[in-house]
Image (cartoon, rainbow, N blue to C red; front, side):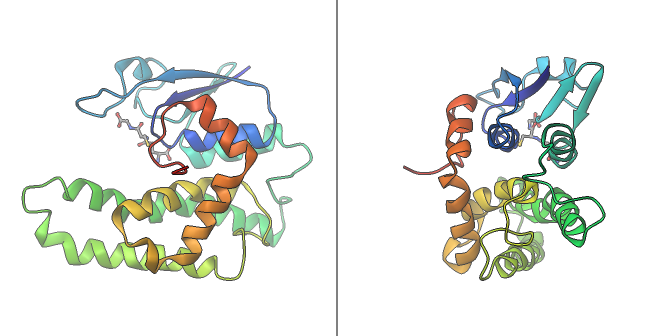
Length: 211
Ligand SMILES: N[C@@H](CCC(=O)N[C@@H](CS)C(=O)NCC(=O)O)C(=O)O
C-alpha cells in the first residue's frame, strides 16, 4: 500500500490532492511541525534521512521530491492517463518541464525571499536580485497561464498540481494583483472537489482557500 508521509502546512498537501484526483488507494501518516521552529519532527528522519515532506513509501521503495513523487504516482496509478500525457508526445515533454520547473527554478526566489525577510535588515543586499528573480519567474508563470486554464494542452495534469504550491505561496510574497492569471489558476485548483477532499484529510493548511 502506498503511504504518504504528510507534514502539516507543506508541499505534501499537493500529493494528497493528486491521489484524491485519481481516487487511488493509499494511506496517510501525519507529522506535525514543531510549533517553535516550524521544522519537521525527527520521526520523519526515520522514513528518509533528509526528514522532509513529501516522502512516500511503497513496499521496499522510499521516494522523495514532490516532482518525482507525482510522476511515480501517475505512472503507477493513472492507467487511463487522466493526468499524465502519453510518453513520447510534446505534451509529455511540457508536463515534465513544469514538473521540474516548480522546484528547480520557481520555488527558489520565493524561498530566498521568505528566509531573508527574517533577517534584521530584511536581506537588504540581496533584495533587488531576489525581487527581480521572483518577478521573472512568477511573471513567466502568469504569462504561461494567459488565456488557458491549465498548463499543458489546456487540460489539467500532474504539472498543474505541482505548480499549485507556487501559486499558493506567491501571494504571501508578491502582489497578487500583478499576477491575475496565476491568481485565477490558484482559484481553479482550489475549486476542484478532489482538492477539497485532500484538505479535509491533510489537516491545517495555511495556503488553501480562504472560504
Ligand atoms: N523540493 C522538495 C522540498 C521538500 C521540503 O523542503 N519540504 C518542506 C515542507 S514544504 C519540509 O519538509 N520542511 C520541514 C523541515 O525542513 O524540517 C519537494 O518538492 O519535495
